[in-house]
Length: 568
Image: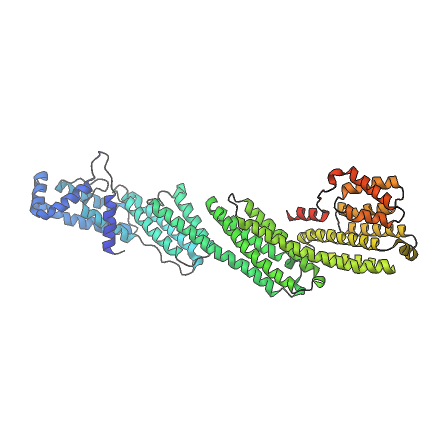
């Protein structure tokens, strides 16, 4: 710091001095007035001093000698490990000079020119280490400054406190510290370094242990630096999160066509990497303050929304280039798993915020649409396989039905053995069952019962065997209990010939399956060919009469219900 600037700073400090305990201005201010009056002639000052002290004017010349000795001792004390005896010697000389000149030196009330030189020496004695070139050394650099400040203040407190100069020393250290902290913020720092910097400043300035050294002498300077550090952290954090999420997308594009990498790690990699990135960021922010954590929540949601937009766009583009009926099932299941996990992540972070954003809902909506698209592709695949198998089965009576079930089992076994894959497996199994029973009943109703009797013999027994086979197979695949009962319950209509029993059976089915009843029950009753049109109408009317409130009821399909459970 240039001498002129130091002198200006020191004069600024002097102006901040308040009144003493008697309500009068400190002697320093009086000395400033005396110093200004000295331009009228040195003989006036010497005459006044002689009149007050009764000492010969020649003795006044000792002031320059005393001051030179005092300044020398102060400089020596600040720059070396000297003891208090040197300063005590200087204090004796100062008091002697004061007695000779009728001036009382007490608690830092020095003449103006003396104090300016004292403060200049104090400023010159404050030396911080050079900023490290490597940002990873920032923590060690600040720890060394912290230790140095504690050491020097503790060493100099017995020397400077009684002289009224300790506060000026701490002020000089504080000024230099904030200059250093601002220089650090201008550097290209990582998130961890900026966060460590904030936590360090919080610790040293708000710890009772360090308040004697690290004082908030200028609240505006203090709060201003913290605000700059917070903005620096959020800027660097945004860039770092965006870069990390972009790397995840790049890795996906790099390995998108390599089916050899479809292992357990590959299955969970996307949502796991995103979750770890955002959760780690939020947990780190909690170590500093709730206000910063709130800002980080908003930032994470914004970056997650941007990532989801890019991820959904990339997956849709790839799906458009694939043949829907020949797409790898494991790949499709992975997309569903990623959508569910990322949506749960968005909901978790969203629920932590009081101020909700539309982007949060848009993120969830984007993932939901992609998930529905993929499940529709899986459904088309399963439906196509079932149609090919059951058309041949009902026309030729061959074993295509067993090939279909074996293929479904093999596809489910191809999923990785992870918790996430097991959740998706449950969805796929229920979806497969949904396609199997619908296509089976549709093909059955399209087939003439007489033709099946000629081909199969005992049609009722064959259907019972098929229903039992489906039930056992899907039970092994962990199909939901409610889902697995549908085909069995519908087949009861085929095995019952008593009209009264049929009315009760249909009334129960109307109640339990409000969506499927209108599509399957009329067709199954007509397919029996043992009932007249009037009897079919009466049975259906009775069922609708027994369940009037469910005539237009909307009931969630078992597949939809289980998907909702897994998504949360």
